[in-house]
Amino acid sequence: MKNYEEAIAFLGQWGRFQQVNFFLLCASAVQNGLTVFVVVFMAATPRHHCLIPDGNLTREWISVAIPTESVNGQQELSKCSRYRLDVIQNLSDQGLLPGRDVNVTELERENCLNGWSYSKDLYQSTIVTEVRLNLFF
Image 1: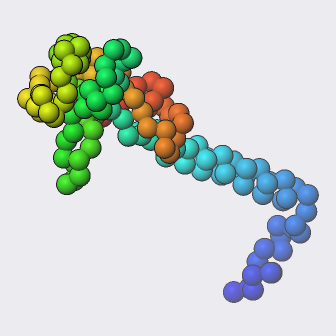
Image 2: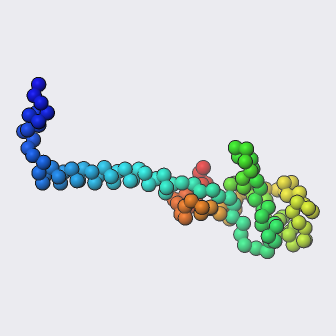
Image 3: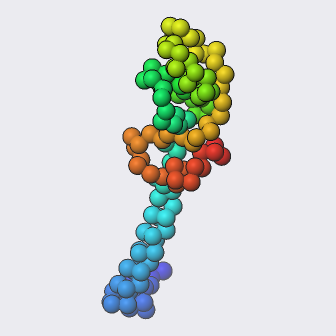
């Protein structure tokens, strides 16, 4: 068996042609890597909860309008439901306070009818927040 240098001698020296080919191959490999890697950031689903539209709710009622759920042993805001806004609006208009005058856990729930409010702690915008893909997850 010949040594390595003798075996590849017929290929020629490292010239302009080899440099251009090497650069083009590297450029295409980097592009493919970025295309696959960008999905990690673009398709992330940030924390979200039901959107509570602006209205005449008091601060106390806005803070309890979304029920909490236990997820992995921690309390988090529900991602898929909220307390019925017409009921909350009624209770707020009567001057009743949540937790003192009304047991909010007994109120009727409804789905997120006005969309979602997304956390911008990690991402300002993702595909999920722009196209509302969280409907499918």
